[in-house]
Length: 309
Ligand code: GAL
Image (cartoon, rainbow, N blue to C red; front, side, top):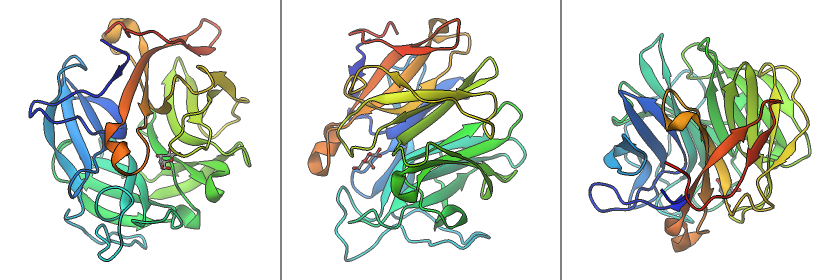
């Protein structure tokens, strides 16, 4: 398939799962990400081959059910009287979902902002019994009081989960360990690259090595991505190494899909080729490219017109 695409779903509508990720469940690939059409916030699609997508539902909308949780949260999703930069209500960005074996719940973490400015810099949490059901919104907050913008989740093999987000007005990248139920922050375990202004984090693991991809900080405009590696999430991380070309082939990282006896054994980089703000946002496309992991652990991302899937 082509490396740049914006597929249509089984309803004939564009697949809006921007800033999202592709995860496996029930024998399918699930694509979960931002959908800012109508009153929607986060949508879910599924596929067997990453080409044909079945719409599964809007996981979060401005009208989602809310529930006050044990941390000090704000429950607003709709903010009447304020015009959103894109869509309706608060801004929800980069939603990611992980499954908690202990509680049997799917837990979503995301970036939350007011409709017309990005000063609050909060994360938000929602939860559901099924991957593609209607999530209950548990509210937004500043993790341990810090600012929190571009973010991702990573679940380790032993079930420990981490929330990674840009703090300090995007200057620093924080790694937080989550509580056992994944619903709250347990502790801040690492502060990466202070003052280096990284965004769009995504983490994956291969052969005991953790890799983190990030972009630079230039809004919707693409820039040079980089990666770093570590032997543990809370340990020492390497310096950053460039990945792809100076615009990461006009994309910003959002996830890496690891093979599981599929994908021809290859790792895949998924990035957003943003259309921009306002109505242009809805023209945003996806960039899906093979990510090469060399024998010595180095990563490289080359451009190909067809990604081989
Ligand atoms: C990017 C960020 C996107 C979105 C955009 C808004 O840097 O990664 O998720 O927030 O800025 O300008």
